[in-house]
Image (cartoon, rainbow over all chains, first blue to last red; front, top):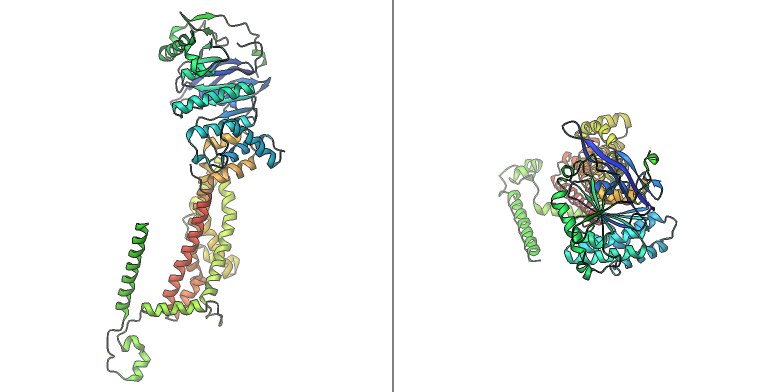
Length: 304
Length: 277
């Protein structure tokens, strides 16, 4: 899956902060990951392992203590309109209408457009997420699912290179979540978006992602494995769970979350574990088997 | 709806009760004591007929009607209509208050956005805030050398603090996620201040403005009593010197009504900028 095209390259980032009783707390250290253009990657791990910090670093909202992130051959130096964030709590501006929220983003990206053109552009994305008819409503008048749709429309409307989603559906009921997953999948496939998404939901990860990154518990969390999703790119919600490998993948991830995420460090010889080449696994019946990751050119020189 | 009606009826009942007790308490106690008519004329009805010096409700109502019929007469410096006096007071409050808005909101923004400025300015605010605005009056009179401008200055200084503190608090309390939205959209400093921070902090800022207008209206009466000349505060003090309790009571009622109107105007403005979440 991860070909030579390293659209996003996380290169040895770490995050530490001074601990209350002296010393330093290491959230994670020497973390490497790369993603190809148009890829959908989910990251799964327990709360507090630092997933959100990784996402915030990708967004440019947070800085790594060491290391760098390179997107499209450019180092990240701060937030950018190239990278749209869908926040967990939707983060809509409550004093603006649906149209106001989306056009605010459009006007921020396309600063020279006329008012009329901004509205027309925003309308296109409001229609895309199925909210036409609700343009004039304030966020307070919308249901949780509709609010998150506005968040998605806002993120898509700036036509970013990457979408970063921090548990976008975790606050929604199961039915709404399913519908929105379908729509996000459709929209991302149509627009060829590169997506990095945090989730707690194993089924969601398998349905949406091409690769699922498993992160161990913090502090000092590591990326333990990258699970390659054996499901075909064209998949349907209604029969995804009938795929012969579906439960193999699901069990593998759940086993990781239940036990291996906790004692991963004890289970592996940490000297042998290469953080730069996180093992790729392609689980399926009968037993998960490891496939060697492709060799990569060293990027250490390019680090600042 | 029923409770509104019942509350209104109860209010009316309480008002009637109050007026009734007032009337009975101030009504004359009975026949005149037998005394020399010349002397009775000299000491007035209060002493000769046992009538209270406190005017009754009918006298006050008559006075209010009189003022309402002709609020803008001007018969010299000590005899101006109630409307003119109120206009002077309201004008002073408005000028001092608007100057305070122009100073408090930008500085409040600065304090709210910069932790450094917040800490640097905090000791000054903590010391200046609890000073009674009237304590500034001698200093103002000495430096400004104009009684009217001095009372405007006093209004300015008393309106400043609630607005300043509320603005700083509102700006500092803007939700992080809204600021993150602005950051990911690469919104510039000024656009962020006007399109994110201002609308987000507006309800808190307007609450501060509402507290300020209330305090300003309280202080103007005292300030005008001190500096004299014109204004509703001066009117009250002048009528006290004339021993016209009827006029004093009338002025008290009018001060209350205007204070309520000012407060309601700001309350309405607050409702306009408040957003549901």
